Every structure is written in C-alpha cells, then in structure tokens.
Image 1 (cartoon, rainbow, N blue to C red):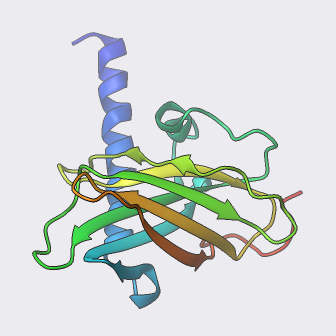
Image 2 (image 1 turned 90 degrees about the vertical axis):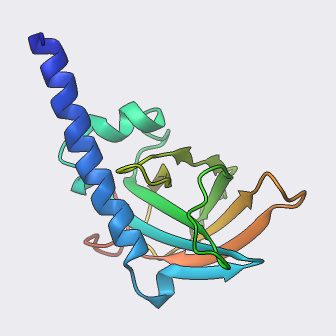
Amino acid sequence: MTASSTRSFGRMVRYGLVFAALAVAAVAAGAQERMEREGVVLYWGLVPSALVSQPHAQEDLHGGRPPGGGRLNHLVIALFDARSGARIDNAVVRAQLSEPGIVDAPAKYLVPMPVNGQASFGQVFGTVYGGPYRFRVYVQLQQRPQEIQFDFQAQSQLVPAGPAR
C-alpha cells in the first residue's frame, strides 16, 4: 500500500466513522426526529459541519461550500418501511431549507450515504441564522408515482442562536 493510498484509506475510515455517528444519532433520536407518512418512517438529524473532524470531508461528498457562506449544517435522513421495518435504500430524496427572512433556495438532492452497509441520505445546507430552520423533504419511491412530503422544524445542535456573521 502506498503512502497516498494509506492516507486515502484513513480518510475514508474517518468519514465512515463520522457519518456512522450521524446516522446512529438520527435513528436513535427522540420523537421529534421521527415522522411517519404513507407507510414510510423518516428519521432525521441535523448537525453543524464543525463536528466533522476533517473540514474537507463534506466538500468531497457534497460538492463544496454553499454559495453565500454562513453556517454549514449537515442534514442526515434514514428511511424505513413502516410495515416491515426494512430500511429503504433506493429512494430519491430532496430537501428544501427555509429560514425566516431569507428567500428559499430550490430543494437539493440528498446524496446516498451507505454507512456500515446501511442506507442513509445526506446533504450540507448553508444557513445565515442559528435556527430554528424549516425543512421540507420530498421522498420519491420507485413503486409510487407521487412524492411523499415531510415537513419539520430543526435546530442544529451546539450552535448559538443569532446571525452567523
């Protein structure tokens, strides 16, 4: 193994551990972080990007810093079939962030993030204020013609309220 491939492997392991923690936090979270609609259970978690030990981890996975700067928060979604409890890994997931006084940007696709062989979806969102934020999540399943919509309010943990500037 070359030094470069060893660094790459080490970086992948760190990313995997960080995202495993995010996925576990999302799934093990309290009632406010679980929603059920039309036979689909959605667990979500929102954490500041500062919790990621390597700042470039999310840039590598999600395409870089959002234009306009502000705080970076990472939204993680896990989906399950309400009847069987089976994890859903083949959905198309989008989310739209709303902040008071800020024009809503278009919804972003959440990137599939396999964590320890378990499917999750995630994306970085730039925010101006400390929250709370409103998210509208759209889940498209292969076997359904219509998207399922989930709306929830979130507050990123460990981030003081107020403007990010």
